[in-house]
Every structure is written in C-alpha cells, then in structure tokens.
Length: 255
Length: 174
Image 1 (cartoon, rainbow over the protein chains, first blue to last red):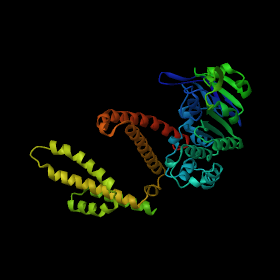
Image 2 (cartoon, helix red, strand yellow):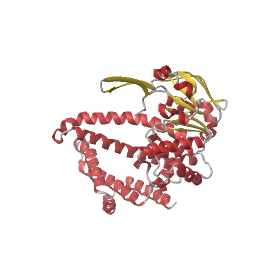
Image 3 (tube, chains in turn brown, green):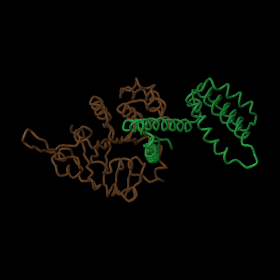
Image 4 (cartoon, rainbow over the protein chains, first blue to last red):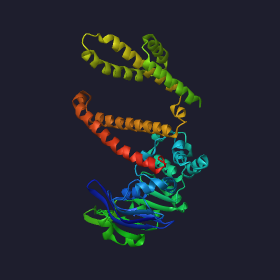
C-alpha cells in the first residue's frame, strides 16, 4: 500500500526525518511513536502528499508521490488517503458541523453525501451538534467533528495525528473501538505510550535523532526500556514515601 | 437561488454607488440602512472614516478646499458600508454564494479565521487585564500591542500553511 525508501526531509536547516524506511501492507495498523518534534507529523504529511521527500521515495500503490506524479492521480489519491491533523482547528471552517463533515465528499464529488454525513455523525455521536458552528464547540467535540470529516470519505488508508489528545475517557474508548471496527489501513501518530498498544498491532518508534529505531510488535518494544528512554517516551520518576526516596520509570502520559 | 439573484443586484447597486456623485442619494441610502445596523458597527465605521479623513485634512492639495471631497468621500463610504451591513442582515451570504463551491469555501474559511482571531485576541486581552492594574494599563499598552502584532503575524503565517494543507488533504484542489 505504502512504501517509504530512505526518505529524508528538512524544514530549512533542520532535518526532521533521516533515512526513513517503512513498508505498509493493506489492512495493517501501525502506531508511530516518538517524543515531541521527532518527525511523526511530518511523516504523516509526506504520506498524505502534502510534503514531498527531499531524498528517497514515497510510493503509494507502487506510484511515486512527487508534485507532478500526485497531480495526475490527485482525485483517486484524495479519495483513498485521509489525514486527521494534530491541530484540528485548521480543519474546521464551515458554518455548521453538518457542512464541515460534508465538505470533503462534496469536494471529491462522492455519491450519497447526506447518507454518509448522517452515518458518521451517528457513529461518532455528534448528530445533536449538526446545526452548531464548529467554532463554538469544546476541543473534544472539535476532535470528533474533524474525525468524522475524514472518516466520511471512507478512505482505504487513514492517517491520524494524535487522535486521542484532548478526549475525555469515554470518548477515548469510543474512538479506539471505532478504529478497530474500520478494518482499513491505519497509521496513528502518538506519544501516548499507555494507549499505543490499543491503537494497532505494529509499533514504529522514532528517536529524537529523527530515525526509526524500532519496528515490530508492542511486546518487544515494551520490554526494551533503553529504546523508550532514547525516544523520550519514558522518564525516571522520583517520589518520597515518608523518609524513603523511591524512583521508577514511567511513561510521560501517566498522571 | 433567490439569495444569489439578490446578491447580484446588490453588487450592481454598490458599483453604482461607487461611481455616483450624488450626495442626496448617499444620504438617502444612509438613512434607509441606519435602522438595520448595530450601534457598535456604526461606531467602528465612524472611527475608521475619521482616521482615513484626517490626513487629507492636513495634506490636501493647496488652493483647494478639503471639505467638498471629505463630505463626498465619507458619505459614499458610509452609504456603501451601511447598505452592505443592512443587506447582509437579511440575506445569508453563504446561500448567496452557493453557485460557486470555491467562493463558498473561501468565504467560510475567511469567516472561520476571523472568528478564531477574535477569540484569540479576547484571550490575549483578558491575560493582559488579569496581570495589569487598570491605572497602569496605558504604560503596558505598547509592549502589549507589539506582542499581539507579532503573535498574530506568526500565527497567520503558520495557520495559512496548515489550512492550505488541510484543504488539499480533503480534495479542495482536485
């Protein structure tokens, strides 16, 4: 489905991806893990054809994603690959939630726009918000609307950048269940180590040096404490029990 | 469709106002539109007109009286602005632009940007007030204004790039 071969990418002088190699099979669920600024979002944008590799190749169904290559197949590509942005506010600009969800299908001239909108509105439990403006919603509600607006395209590949951030515990569970129901290829970028294993079967770990340092199952990853420390996903936590100083490792997202 | 036709007629009317030199027509339009315009908007418009007109008062071509030009300019601007405000209190611009997918999306996008900036500015101002005594607000104002300007400039730059990517990702340029 997707193949990245020795991909490099920089913003000006700052290189954010170094020699990335990644193969994605149809139906696979990949979780992209890494600390802040390690290049997770950039990698998703490269796979969504929003940025282009400086060195190396990004292939989708065997076809290279370059500006000219994408132009020739953009309609097919946009119907097949969808991205949920980390900052969902940049995705929400329509006057009502209903229009927001219908935006993508209308742009891509898809059939049954109304049915699709109703279906995904119901699945995400946001139908009561349909007549409201996305600007008025809470950040958790905005996240659900943005998620509905990419799921409504019913893509073959779903790229999700921190889909669980700012969601309350119940919504977090609902979104995880929904993602498992989908049976499509998903790539989820997150730094939430506690929930990572619930989002997919394969873990890909990016280091702070912007390289892939692990690609395999979660069991192997969780047993390798040094790798998690190197990727800045674990830290040594110290606290006192009376006079006794106690320290242990735990992920940053534990409260 | 009704909205689109009304919008086209209104645009023609605004062009006519822009070319007209009849101050009585401007005055009539201002009085007709006035009841449909919020006081806050009227004040904002008056402040803008004063700011624009003042330099002309001081730097107008020598030997010419500035008053005729200023009266005509201000009346015309008021007629155009107030009639637009009155028109859009009756007609939904989004429905009027329904004939064009692109125009509708661009209008929604501008509106969303405006609303988001308004909210962000509100937060900025609240943060300033919560850390400043009312009396000393004047002294803090210039560094505050500088910070706001620089923040909004950087925010616009970043947001514009990301929004463009979000539009592309959802097939806007297909």
